[in-house]
Length: 78
Image (cartoon, rainbow, N blue to C red):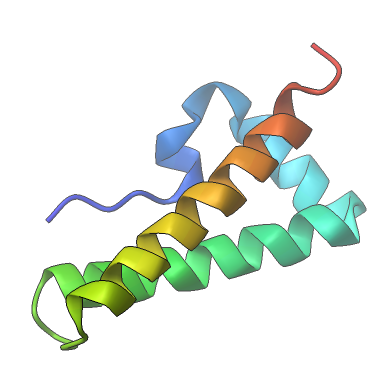
């Protein structure tokens, strides 16, 4: 199953992601939360962890919400 870590999702922002992780506490918190959710969803998708369909949907919706917020931060000054 394919992973969806932030660097692979937005390779054009790899440098900016690293910079913001170090310099921006809000970005770092969102980044960490995204990473944890992505890891949990990967475990669900590979049947390592079993959850209800409703919970899986909630996890994915939350991941997309955070991803959108991170993307907004990454593209703010472009």
